[in-house]
Structure formats: C-alpha cells, structure tokens
Image (cartoon, rainbow over all chains, first blue to last red):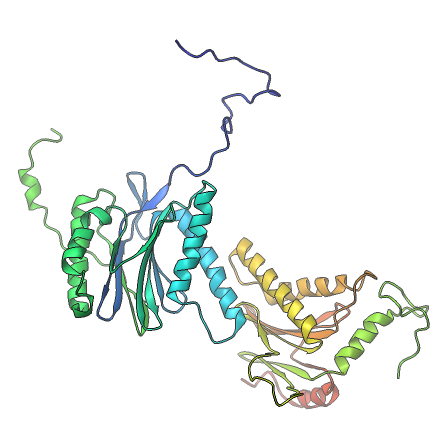
Length: 247
Length: 185
C-alpha cells in the first residue's frame, strides 16, 4: 500500500517541496572530482603523478587542474576526490604554514607533521559525518627519512613504499608492488619515471575519468619539483577489432 | 617633569580640565623610557632596528626576539612593554589572517594600520583597561610598495619615511632627518 501523505500546517512540519525537508544532512556526494594519484619511494626520494583533470561527473570539465602541490619546504601533497574540499584544505594548510613562518624560529613543519595535521582534520570531519571527500597522498623527506602516507575521507591512514588512490589502487598498485616493493633503494630516477609512465598509461586506457595530460612531481633532498604537464604515447589500434557496443 | 594630575589621572576614561587624558600620556612615558626602536622606509623595503638591552649574561641568544613577523609581508618592532607588543602582534596576525580568509589577498598596509589604530584606541576608552604602553612600528609591503606606520598608545597612527621611538628617539630622529631616504636601498 502507498504511504498516506498528510499536509500538515507549516508550523508543524515543513512542506516536502522545501529542499531542507527531512533530517539535517551533510556532504553526500562529491561534485568536481580528481581521479587517481600514484606515488612511490625510489632511490632519491618520492615520486608522484596525477592527471590534470577535474571531472564533473562524466564530463571532463576542468582540464588544467593542479592535483599535486607543495606544502612547506619538503612536502608534496597529491589529491583525488572532491576538488572544492581540496581547495578548502589548501587554504587551511597555507594558514598552518603562515603560522609557522610567523614563529620565526628557524624551524618548519616536516612531512610527518603535515601528514598528521591533515589526518586530524580528516578524522574530525568524519566524526561529524561531514567528510572532506578526498583521498590524499602525502610524500616527503623528513630528517633524511622518506615518508609516504595516505589519508582518505574515512580518515583511514597508512604508510607504504607504494601508494595509489582511486582506480590506481586497483590497476596501478599491482604494478607498483611487483616493480617497486622491496627494491626502492635500487630504483633510479630513470626507472622511476618509466614505472610511473607504465602505471599512468594503464590508468588512461582503463579509467574513464582520466585525461591524457599529466603532471609528475618528485621530492628529493634538494626539495620539491613539480613538472609541467605532459602527455603519454598511446596506441588505440586494437579498438578497430572491438565488436559490440554501439552500431 | 610632569604636571601632577591630581585626581584626573586615575583612569583613562577621565579628561582633565585642560583637555588631556593623563593615562595616555603616562603610557607614552613608559615608551619614552624604554629601549629605542627605529624604522626606515627606503626604496625597496623597510628596515627595522631595535636596541638590545642585555640585562643578564645568562640570557639565551635568539630566545626573545623584539622584531616579530606577522604574515609574509608584515614586520613589527616596538619600544615599550614587550608583553603589550606580543599582544598587539598576535592581533596583527589575526587581522591579516581574517583579511586573507575573506579577500584572498595580503592585507594592505593602510588597512592593517587603521585596524591596529582602532584597536589600540579602544583601550583608551574604558577605565577597566589600561592603554598599551608601546609605540609600534608596522613595516608592510603591499601593492603600493613598502610602507612604515607608527602606532602610538593613544591609537594615533601616521605613515613615516623614517621614525624612532623610545629613549634615544630624539637623537635618532636628528640622524634620520639627515638621510635622503628616497635614494637609499
């Protein structure tokens, strides 16, 4: 039987047409999103890559997004998920850095501190059931030690030699595990770039929300370096042989 | 030295019959009796300097900086009570941060000087609080270039090419006036 809907006076219950009808709700869906971030440790430090796309659902809307940014002296932050939540967090991190600068004591926050600060914010929001709909990859060199960590909207954190978010965790992570795990100290920059390209190429072929315009970044003892956008060589000849799908 | 206030100097919310607020003047005295601070606005920036009075050999170097930062484009030095200065610098930082939160831009020198002037002046209105015993030198770099403002305990603020506060302010001012600040870098 259909439920009977009663029209009660507006002082008793708000009409359903009003968008604020119902219990108080928080973030339920991301709007403009970024897809995978892939990162791993290599001989000289950390290397990370992400494409330059901000998707609006299935629309490839913003094709010059910066999903890799520098935080402080030696920390690199990669983001996937809702871009506006990321922009809000960028502002918060900038405030953190300015506050550090004001202290004027010759010290600056290391990667581990940035990672913890970020994790705390994510956890606080998750507890309020109003998450920042992101998955972050934090990488850097803290006191000579290579740090690479992950935080997501549930505030799950973990550190590893290889990290990938989104589709990358399904498609790129196996590649990274085979090629990187256990031999990070042997991987030169040349090989690291090659591994990264292999991962990003697979992602471009298989993830529908990617774009063939990527940036990569590395953190070494010299600091953070984020590259200009570049594209991958792809081969779509196999597409001619596909049968089915469409007319 | 000073004329005796006789009853008109007990709180900052009282005028004297000749139109003076003695508490503010006494605050100015506190400034005049402390270590000198100098600011010079030159072509490409502002230089701030303070006199360091080492009252003990046991002091740890760099642990008590008298020139403070408030955001990447503002520097603050002062003459007077250091504890009052720290309070004011905290306020400068908060104002700069709030401005940035709303307008995503560095707070312009004129605006931060005005806000701080208003803040300092507020403490000259109520008998429950005392005026700040500091003359603050605000060095700020914005779109119009480097600027220097000096805030006095009365809340008055003026833009300067070169200014000094504290014990040696007369001597310093005389020397500063001899310089051609517009040409120096």
